[in-house]
Image 1 (tube, rainbow, N blue to C red):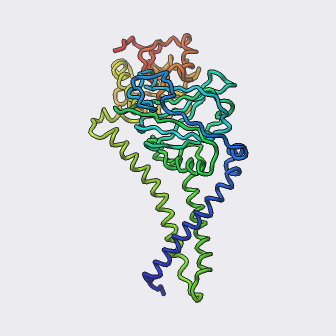
Image 2: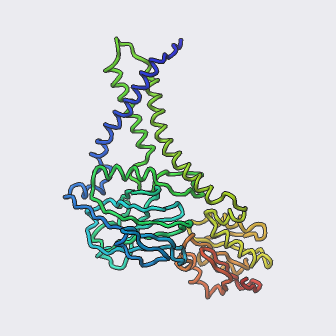
Image 3: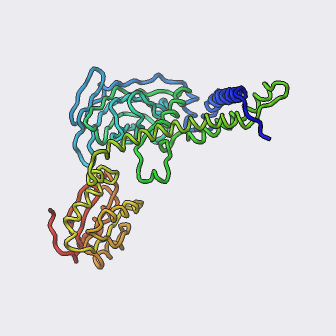
Amino acid sequence: MNTPISNREFLRALGLAVASIVASAVLLLPAYLSLVPVLHPEFKPYIEQQKADAIAIPGNLFRPVVFGDGGLEGSVAVISELAEIAPEDHAVLIHRRLFQADQFPFLRYHIEGRNPALRVMLFWQRADAPGENHLAELDYSGDGPQLHNLLRNEEWRGTITELAVGFFGDLRGGAVKLHGVELEPYSHSGILQAVWAEWTAFAPWTQSSINVHRGVPRGALMYPVLATAIWLATSILVVLLLRQITRPNNQLSPLWLPAILATGLAWAFLDGLWLKQLFRQNDETRHLFAGKTLHEKKLADWDGEYYRGVESIKELASNHTNDVIILYQEGHGAMAQRMRFHLLPQIMARKLHTANASSIRNANKEFDYVVLLSESGSTPYSQPVFRTVLEFMSAANWSMVWMHGPVALYATNRAQPVTES
């Protein structure tokens, strides 16, 4: 027979659940910090060596090398306009300084005015590879100081001779301000801040987010789901221990009640992280699509570059033939399917294939036009699919009809002549 739970028993169970959650956090945080050399061996050299002083670099010490418009406000570098340079508008600020990467695993940066459409990259050059740029994308978590784990990139090593901060994408009518960056040595607070920064970082969802959403950047120190599961399991063990210590007259309240409440508290924490991501994506979706026509929405979508290419291809080729093949770069088959969809109903692409010597030769036998797809945001001729086509172009005897961004249209030697509009 089930016995109703009194308010007093519920409050006692709730107090026990809260105490277990707090106690498990107090136990796990020092345990995690002590196990950093084991869980994250890349930090071991930084932990064992003598700590160097942090290096602070204010924004006004960065020199613009690629710039649209902007200036300085005291010690702050202000970018009000990006340089319009293909394949993506950008600005790059550079600072030359010699230091050892193996002293600084963390970068603290303060950038004001960021938005999800503006990517911020950290570039550096090393003494052992002069002129070669290495890069890391700085996560977006809103305005204010943020911490980045530099060891997510294996090329952060050796003697650094140059740092640069690059802004790529869209300012969305505002200005972005670089207050400064600071290179920091290893510390317990730094590792915890880096974990939290990765858990709260936001990147706009893509077409693959419907299947899987990692919730953290690639190379993150720890996944929040795993950490929360360990936290909850430890708290349940603490509940069992506290019940043994605090039981009155051997009268035990039901174990399931504090266990369920502890589970609810852990779930609320995890769901809070998810809701923060959800609300940010909701704001981003409203910004991109609210109040726009269907055509404008398609241009603003993640595959807007490809849709823009489709519109031009329809004007050029739809009155001539439907004998079209789409050749795409390895790993971009899903985008080729998306392209085929956008071409309908005016053009039916009868075949999709990765670009190689065989597909290029066969295109002359079966098709009038070839649509080439490369990676979005790239310079076309830097991509493998275009290099492959150029390699066999003379033998294939194709002629370029149109190219823009990651999309190009070629006519084979059996196509009717068309002119670019």
